[in-house]
Image 1 (cartoon, rainbow, N blue to C red):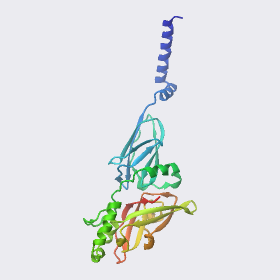
Image 2 (cartoon, rainbow, N blue to C red; image 1 turned 45 degrees about the horizontal axis):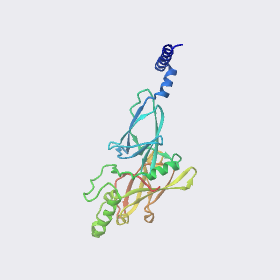
Image 3 (cartoon, helix red, strand yellow; image 1 turned 45 degrees about the vertical axis):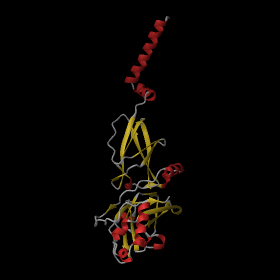
Image 4 (tube, rainbow, N blue to C red; image 1 turned 90 degrees about the horizontal axis):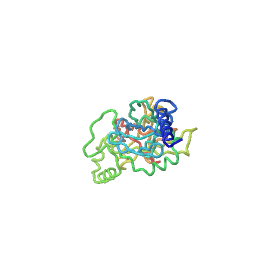
Length: 289
């Protein structure tokens, strides 16, 4: 057989393979292996309806990105199949998954972290290590429910460490009468909601979650009790539109609840020793661990 016939035979074989790849199911499988189609995934991350900016996201434990000012993120050039991604927010991780296929994907609704109760069992040591290495989550303004009087210009609803220090310094410079005149709502605006998990304290499969507040000592001393409503329908106080109470100032008004997973937000209101009360405010939880 001469070289010309060999070349023609190879060419015919190659064309046959190409046609098979284009028109048969088996060929389609071979094409996906040799020349995999690339897809993209787009979604938005919000917390209590507010977009979360600069939130780190990890795809399939290897590719990472972060949200923009609208809470949007995009993963491009991904393969067909099931993909898992983790959203890191306030030292906690929120796992999601999606499927990329030849069908046009439905428009993804924003992922609202405040509506999720994430099982503790989904948090692996590797995930915790990754979360610990990430920069702190940017603080977000607190949502107020129901609407109440506007906050005086001297206070802010965004709680950061620097602002808390400035507030503490300004309090020391204030006259006692000025501190006494401040409203319960204004005090609540300066308060940070915190949670410490204790996996050594269990009721069945549920672990202890310690809810407490931090803020300027002068303000905390004015508080009689703190009312918490965990923002998920699996908790009785949420379903009954009521609250649980922390009244021990020495423990920063700690309330211990038993949960099998974590949430991002809770409603908080306070009652002062003078009898005045604040409206209920939805606050983002700052986790200690």
